[in-house]
Image 1 (cartoon, rainbow, N blue to C red):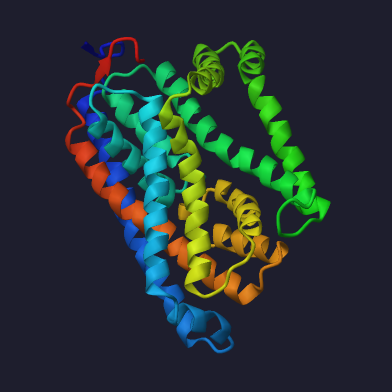
Image 2 (image 1 turned 30 degrees about the horizontal axis):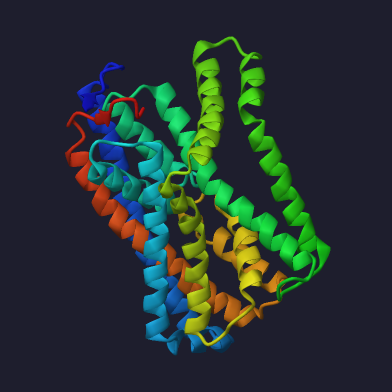
Length: 344
């Protein structure tokens, strides 16, 4: 049984069209800019003296391992799609999957510190009549689930390295300290619903109170989803694991194989730069990853070469596929949103 949502007045067509045009222009311009930056970087690495230790591994990289890396990144994207399907269940999965791919493109190329995709998704769902409070709640579920996999890895791998169970650096500052921070974040997240309720009580503006309350409901809803144990929860883990596997495959492509734990920890620490609102995190994420890898014992030249390959794959694949998905979503923006009864 299915129902068509009608809980919220539709957005005026002119405003919706303008917002859709804005997203379309941003995605097109950012995609073109991404390819220009990649071309410039390739030209600089090939022509500037003193970069032979980076350009050499890049020019001789294994095509087989690069194809593996592309496959791993695709599986990572599929993991995100599964999380969206879990958080926003539909009578039909294809439109929701397209929306997830569009969000991935926005996360990749729009300057919103990783929240561009959720913003795009919120616009689409609002246009289709889903209440803003419900969107905020379920978007919090998406953010919490995708973040939980990273934090869990930080705690588990950090502890395992710190006590010497796996190969890699064992310094407490690089292992036990990050693990402790991750554990503290888990504790805060578990108290998220009650904390949000207390914070909401500090404000009087209805819209602010509603937003904070909806986020608190999102914390609670995340705990509900974790207890339900739907198989799509594996998507959150796949989103992280296969992205790390992409980086590991680019190392293999240049013939270097650092300890996987070092790659995991460097990936977790280095990706923190993605919170800086720069399109695709270009420059800052790359630098953060390279610096983190060096910190965890990888030589500078191979770390640079592997990260450059990884970043090209992890940016271009979701950007292209997601932009295509966005234009399909935009074409169907006025089609009614059909939900299973009781699913939302």
